[in-house]
Length: 317
Image (cartoon, rainbow, N blue to C red; front, side, top):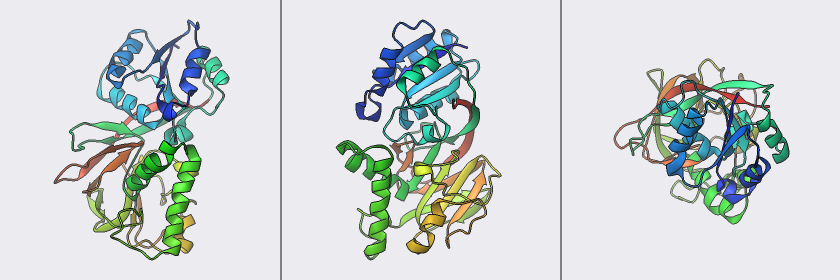
């Protein structure tokens, strides 16, 4: 096995974890370390890793860098065989790494493992492939959402992360604020500052329209758990992509909030909500969508097509 390490020093609003890892690996001849100073150099770095025979790629970053690397690996033939990925949770939110990332948080322990990687736990997971964003670029990630999902993510990044509130606490603060507003103030579908407002969303799966009209949100993911360990999907995992929609108006928050985000596959769903396990689907909306923390415009005049991407192997510990 040959280890390559890609470090994004700007991850986590420059929290210093990647820099500390690079320092811990200094002088280690067994690991090939590259610091990503500009995204324009990402392909050249990956090409160098491939030429060096890298088999295990350690990524010190947040979700956005992981998604950029997955896209590059999936859409090119730089590597004759896809390298195993080890996601080091050094970003601001790290939703992907929380599910399929390396479980040890200590920088010293991470450096020691990279120097002598003997994986004890491997998991395989396909990507979510977004085919036709408005800019024409194909992208691979692990989570895609629109409607209230993208609105809440943008709020969290701009109003909380940029002020130093990060990680799970920022997510909890945004979620708690939205739930509190829904509980104690009357609905206002015209208030663009609220997450709980109607979005025009039509979702099709397996050739059938499963949701149309005004919805609260739609999401598609190959992760098994999302932010704060939530699982807003049910009905059985018969396909690789979990596809969920929630309706607007929002069902009773006191009755349905916890069952909406937690519980088993056979739990009762809120009225109007849908959850499917699919290999392909489409989402038609005029709203932007978020993919692993990065924002993109939906295609104009057609639905966003979503497919199951290639399967990667992840080193968990």
